[in-house]
Structure formats: structure tokens, C-alpha cells
Image: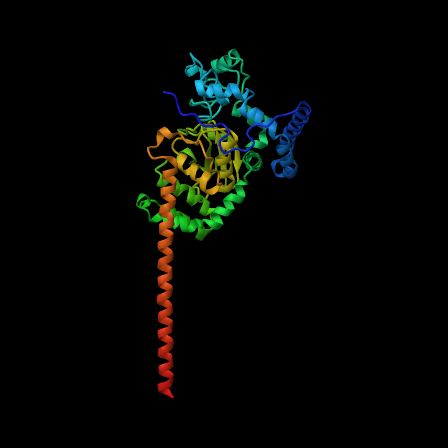
Length: 399
């Protein structure tokens, strides 16, 4: 059965940018400079202002490497008819492509119509672009090989750091993610939203609000509202939290993650919390079942997690889609007229209805809370007036 195709440029304003030969030379040189900075400079000394500028200057080249070099017409034909080679070195789509044709980019990539499998070391069956049957099929159909996430993280290392991912995402979508996240915290009143979620029958057994209050009291978490909102949304939608956040031992080093017994990293973007998420002092970021970078806070980690879905053209994780869709539409305000980054086959209710139902319930709850507060204020005013009258009578009597 053919899977539903979604636009590769879903929610993106600058998905593909043309490069002139002269600019290409400049971009390649700038790319080389960034690689040298990454290799030869301590992380604490990275000149981020200069790096941000170089990321923007080389943005078209990054998109070319991420999207692949195929012509738009050929890409559309693949999406419509399943011709050989899936977007982002996902599962090759031509006739005869089987399990050995799996390669490259995490999860189900946009426009491929097939579920790709992790292609970096230790995951997937064809580890790098051009390896295995997928690479052979891509060559045979006249399509240039696309780079795996492992290759991209090597060639564009700053792209997989929080600030670098943010810079690329903002340029790609023409939306400032951190500004939107701050606006959500100011305008949507996350504590009120958290309180609302905790009143729902679906979350009556959730312990997240209690942990949130404890984190606020003990100041163990820098962004407790954001953490609680994400976790409670996942619980409300009965989604698998481990598709987005996995808790590991707080003393784990980044090069030790792959050796943890029983730990299976999902192919889609994922955060690894060093200890309980409300107490974690750091996070690791995983994509294609490989840890590629770290983050100092949940806010930075969430930036990597959410933004990477757009930057890398990945469909939302099957069992985390509602939470990610909330972040997209309510927080980031990215609401394309058509298409979705979710796999509709996993959900019976239409996407827009699920989200709107939750927002309507919140609006009704907030209205009821306001009515209750207004009534309490009226009662208090009446009591104050009554007491002031009694005080006057007492004063007259005593005179």
C-alpha cells in the first residue's frame, strides 16, 4: 500500500536555494573554515557570531547537501510513482528494492513515501551514501547520491549544535523559534496550561505536575514549564515519551551511550536526559540512532529535537506526532494550508480536530476559571463592604 506523500518543503520558506558557480566556490571555502574552527578550537571558545554568519552564508549549500542534488521534477516523479531512490537516502523505492536497499536518513523522510532506517554506523544495513544496494540503485537511475546524517554531521558539525541548528531553522522557515517559544511562555501561560492538563481525566494518574512543583521549589530545572508542558502533552495523547526523551545515568559520557545495555535509540530525533529530566544538568542529542551532540539545557535540547525535523526533512516520530504537531502549530505558529509531518495512518481522528479539541477544552476551562475568580472577587468586595458598614455602626455606638 502506497503511503501518503507530504510536501518536502512543508512549513519551509527557503527549502531550495540556487547557487551560482562563483558563490559555490565561496561557500565551499567557508565550509572548510568552519570545519577547521570545529577541529582546532575548544567548544567554549567557538566564535559563534562569526559561525552564525558563515552558516547563513553557506545556507544554500547546506540545503543542497541535505536535500540531495536531484532535480525537482525527478523528485516529484519519485514521490508520485515511487521511482527508484527515496528522499534523503531513505529506503530505495524502485522495483526490486528490498531490505538491503535501506540506507541513510532517520525515520520516514518527507517525500519518500517509505520508511527509511538509520544509515549511520551501527544502524541500518547500508551505512553511507553510495553503500549497499540503495546507493547502487540511485546511481543506476541517474540520481546523485545523497549524504547520510553521519556524513552531514561530519561535514557540517556546527549544524548539529543547538545554536547552529537554530540559525539554519530560522533561515529555512523564516521563523525565530526561540522568540516563538518565549512568546508561548508569556502569552499561553504554561503554568495555567499545566494546571489545566493536570485536571483532565486522561492525566489523573500523572505525576508530572508534582515533579514540576518540586523542581520549581528546589530550583533543579532551568526551564520547568517547558519540560512539564512537553511531558504532559505526550501523556495526554498517550504517546511514547521514549520516542523523544530517554533518561540515562547522569554520569554517562557521550561516547559511552552506545555501550548501554538494552538501550535502543530510535531512528528519529531524540534527547537523552542525564538523570531525571527535571533534574538533568545536560542532554545528548541523537538522530539516526547515533548521538551527535550535547545540550546544556532542555530548552537547547528541545531546539535540536524540534528544529531537526524541519532541517533534515523528517516526518514526525510515529508515537510522538501529536506533541510535535502542538509545538509546530501552537508554539512555532507554523501552519501550512496543506500537508503534515505526521503519519496519518497512526491516528483515527483528523489532525486538526485533535489539536483543536484540546485547545477548545483549555479555552473553556480558562473561561470557567476566570468566572470563578470574578465571583470570588465579587464576594470579597461584598464582605469588605459589609465589614466597613459594621465598623461604622460600632464607631457610632461607642460615641
